[in-house]
Length: 324
Image (cartoon, rainbow, N blue to C red; front, side):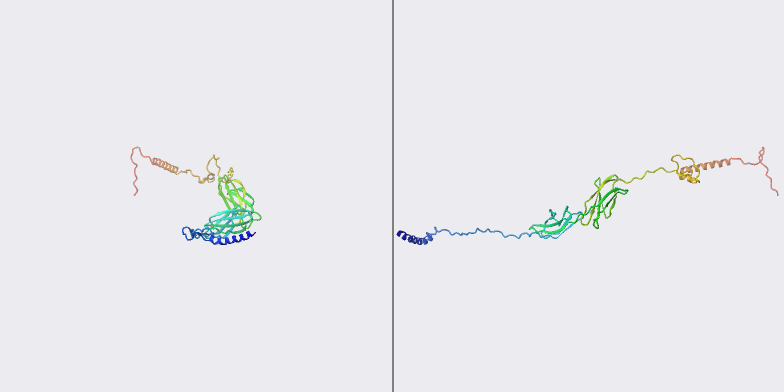
C-alpha cells in the first residue's frame, strides 16, 4: 500500500514534464526538416462560374378570352395574345370529358360538346421563357334545337317541293336549311324562314335525297332525312282527234277533199282563190295571151273588104263629077 502511494504522484509529475516536450517540434532550427505550411478547410472548394446572361421572360397570359357557339353547334374560343406568346394550348371540359386543341393563332373550335352542358375553357400560352398561367372562363352550352316534323318531298313541274312542320317550341328567328343530294354527287341547298320551298334547276330523271335542319343563333338541330325522289318534268298531254266542224250555211258546197288537201281557209274564201301561184307561170300565161292576141289581129287584117264588084273588063269605075 505504501508503494502505491508514492507511484501515483510520480506518474502525475511525469505527465506534467512530458506535455511541453511533446508540443515542441524536434529540430526546430533545421529548415530542411521543417514541414511546409498547408491550408486546411472544412468546406469544399467553390468553382469559378461565368457571369450568367439574362434569361428570356416567360409567356404572358392571354387577354380578352371569349367563347361562343356558331350556327353549326361548335364552340368557338377566341383571345388576344400577350408579349412573348408563340403558341397556345386550349382545353374545354364538359360533362367529365376534356377536349384539347393546340393552336398557333388566336382561336380554336370544339365540336360535339353536349347541349346544355357546363363548359370550362382554359388557355395556356407558351413562349421561349416558359408557359404562362392558365386563363379560364366557364359557361353553358345552349339547349338542343328541336327538329322539324312531317318533312316530305314530292316532284312538281318546276322541281322538288320540300315541306315540313316546325316544332311548337321553336325559337323566334329560326331558319331552315334544306339540302338535296343528287345521285351524281351534286348538292343544292336553300335557307328559308317558311315551312316549304321548291328547289329548282334539277336534272330530269335523276334521283335526289335530302334533309331539313332547323337553325338558330345558338346552334342547329339534327337533320331530318327525306325520302329519295326521281325528278322528271311533266310531259304534255297527247293531242286528241280534231272534231269535224259543221259546214256553214253560207259556204258554197265543195267536193270531198282528199287527204292532205288545201287548208280549210281556202274553202271559206273562194273569192280569194288565185289560178296562178307562181310568178313564172304568170309570165308564161301573159306571153301566151299576147301571142293569141297577135294571131287574132293578123286574121282580121287578112279578111277581104266588102263593096260593089268590078267589071270583068278591068276598067275602073267612073267617078261622078260634082254638081256645080
